[in-house]
Structure formats: C-alpha cells, structure tokens
Length: 296
Image 1 (cartoon, rainbow, N blue to C red):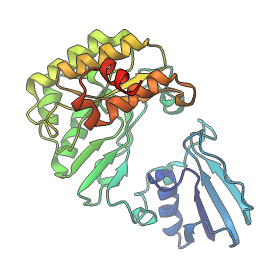
Image 2 (cartoon, rainbow, N blue to C red):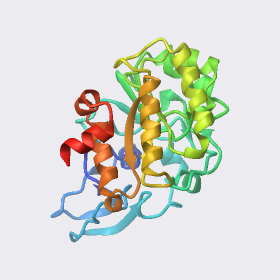
Image 3 (cartoon, rainbow, N blue to C red):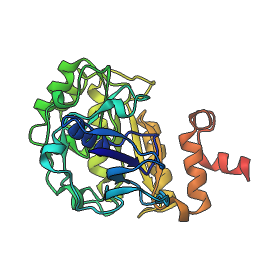
C-alpha cells in the first residue's frame, strides 16, 4: 500500500500518532511518506491536535482518508497493535529526542483539560521506557500525570537508569510530591523541571508541595528550583494571578504564564504573559505594576 501522512498542525512538534502509524505500516513493507499533494495514495491519515489549526483544504487523491487526533474526536484511538509500536523517528529527522508516553490518564478532571475525558480519570502505565527510547540523549515525556500512577517509582527508576536528559513536558503534579519522589527526581537528569499552579482552590496543597521540593532539591539548573505553569484567564482574577507570580518569585521558582482562550483574553492578561515569559524583562522589572506603567 502507498500511505500518506498529513500533520495538520505543522512540523514544530512531532506528531506521535503519525510516527506510530508510519512504523506499523513500514513493518508491513508499505510505502510510507508525508503527503505530497500531486500524488495518489491508497490511504491517507490526517492528524490534528489543536482546534485552532486551520484544516487542510487541498484535494486529497486517495482511496481512503482517515481523520484522527484530539481536535477531531476525543474518542478516536490508535489500534492497540499500533499504539504499542516504537515510533518512526525518521519521519521528523529534525528532532533528535525520544518522544512518548509512559502513562495515560489523570484523576484530576480539571475543567480546562480534556485528558480525563479522552484518556480516563485514572493514571495508568501504558509502556516501559525501552518501548520508545532507543538511546537518544534526550527524552521528552508527554505524560499528563506520571506521579498519579501507582507504578511511578518503577518508571522514575527507568528514567534514572537511562542516563538521558528528561523533559517532563506536561509538568509533574506538585500536589503528589513526597520526600521519596524528590529523592528520585534528584537522580533524574533534567534540564528543567515543570510544575503547575492552575487551580487557585488547590493553592494550599500546591504551596506545600513546592516548599517540600525546594527543601530537598539538589539542582537548580537555571538558578531556580523549576518552572511553574500559571493558568490565567480561566477562573482567577488579575490580583490572584499576580499573587501567584509574586509568591513563586519569593520561593525561587520561575513562573510561566499560560492563557486560557488567549484570543479573547483581556489586554492586561496578555501584557502579564509578555512580562513574565520574557525572562530578560521579568528579571529587570520585578513588579508588573512598574512594567505596565512603562509601556502605558
């Protein structure tokens, strides 16, 4: 079969589903490549993650066209024998890291997140590291909540044993932090560790975890204990956003502003993001009130 693959979101981040489909079809001696508009295919897979990405409007010459990805349908899934394939990393030669999930699902059920509906309200192991890490120097984990998985210590040990640099791209649930987890994270090679302070109602538990981690963390790669995603424009006031940012600075964490429904966010929130996320500005101007006055 001649198989075409379309990554609607572009190529700024590899599409894991397409890489697994490529590996599965290549294992069956099929001809697989990224889609080229003038060619005829037996089957074309179209994958899109983000709802804001415009759909492809070109004519697709194929006997069969299959759509998949979070943006199209939260219920669609790869067949089990495809899901367990080691991704075809040659599909995106510009990326040298290993990408994959050790766990799926999250018990939190946050209203701004689709993971609970898509993957279930339980964090469960779906792979061992060796199923997608083939010796790359860096691993990018896409897990939504690894620490909520009952097997998290076993999986953290696999990351330690890999000796690769690990990026927990979706962050680690700081509310689940323990002395044992801190000890194991101290042994994982990380360029930057990410947490999140999204739910203002969980502030007490989040602060408890941040202080626990800071007490025993042995590395500060960029002069701070880690970066903390701060969700704005969802269910917090501007004053609550500033309160979290100033508290994170006090605790020596580096905040990173995420804006929910950014297209309709107020100007003040977008300015807040620019101030915090531009680290040159953030370090030179300690208070948003002063930054806001300077730019009018």
